[in-house]
Image (spheres, rainbow, N blue to C red):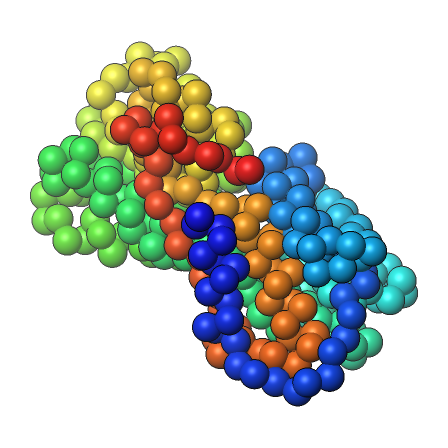
Amino acid sequence: MFRKALLCGLAAICLAGPASAKELKSIGITVGSLGNPFFVSLAKGATEEAKKINPAASVNAVSADYDLNKQFTQIDNFIASGVDLILINASDPRAIAPAIKRAQAAGIVVIAVDVAAAGADATVQTNNTQAGEIACQYLADKIGGKGNVIIQNGPQVSSVIERVKGCKSVLAKYPTIKVLSDDQDGKGSREGGLNVMQGYLTRFPDIQGVFTINDPQAIGSNLATKQLNRQGIVITSVDGAPDIVPALKSNSSIQASASQDPNAMGRLAVEVGNQILNGKKPENPMVLMPSRIVDRSNIGEYKGWQ
């Protein structure tokens, strides 16, 4: 229902444009890593939407492996193959601009997904500020509005910066909550979250809550609490990833995650791109998808990244 509402609501964010129709025949997708279930689901949603628009449409999804030069080459290959639309999860949101310009000069629409990319025709992403807000509001409520809290940061892309900003805006409302640290990079991974959390637990003897910028870092942080036998710490995060489901169903320190919907993100990105291809530009090129809290009370109903 949520996904249907997003797609149906697209008409409200688009302005009527020229009547000339252009058929969507080919899409290129370049993402950080197809080893990440988030991007697999995003590519699947994009493919499904493309086939809905044109059953004969071809979709080529590739993994940039967070390598800017590799992503440059992939975009050049998309241009050479004559795609109509590119979805890009930029390895470097600013440095990718020249490649985006080359694609646009060739008449290709470029939509940034998950994180903003300089010069893209539009961006489709989770409302990351809101996700950070609701995850940290949950955290504040769980610890009774007081205590020592860690904000475990991550790679400085727009989504992470916005999540941390949203979290800080909530925690700032509580004079009895002290943020012990907010600048350590958990690398967006389990290993990074584990290493950073081990350092925190060694450094700080009294911690009530931790906000991590994504679920892999949360899972790594939870493992660190087990290894060092630190109980009673509330961990919240952002993603609603498949791996967080068993953690929320168990007696772990992870108690909530602000969910994303990568499948719907891929669908919406293709829908927006097809609209632009046919002369209908969104009123606001930043299209934000709302997040919601997933915790132990509703995990049984959570559909996940389907």
